[in-house]
Figure 1 (cartoon, rainbow, N blue to C red):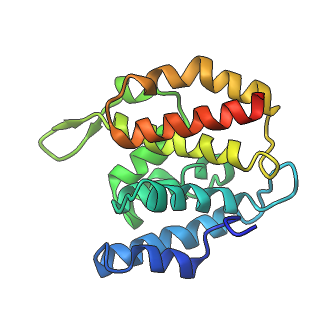
Figure 2: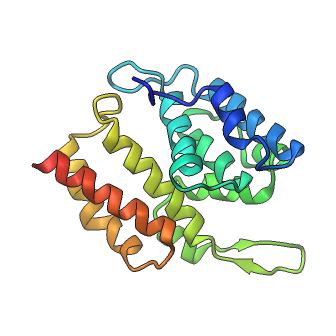
Length: 196
């Protein structure tokens, strides 16, 4: 399958001339960290879990035209805490930055976590509530799960899509961010395909 995963060569091509050389190296480092961290994790069908995380990053870059390194890195590492006890917030913060560590940590929680635990963006205690960033990665992750349900069947697809529709889409549907609206529309297309 052509879009089965994002290779490192394709990643480099997607970010070339869109991020600085330092940011490029950070994104490639996140790709390598994800590859190592997810090495032994497989989907129920036996496929490498790493492929899913690379597809989420590709979705952000190709379909949403996101070039923000923090989001690409967080997409690659979004399930890190489910697979590795050795990689801590401190390691992610040191290798990338505190915001990436915050996002990766927040993605293991529900959406209310963001509202109750804002990110302190600097030493002066300025607060950032990264709801859009969280939703973009979260929705892209679930969109990939539905598009590749034969490869990532963690749940019964019907129950999975009904759960997303009932519990999670309402938080995203009222958001005016065009990238979030695109993801909501694509999730609904996948829902209709699965339920028809």
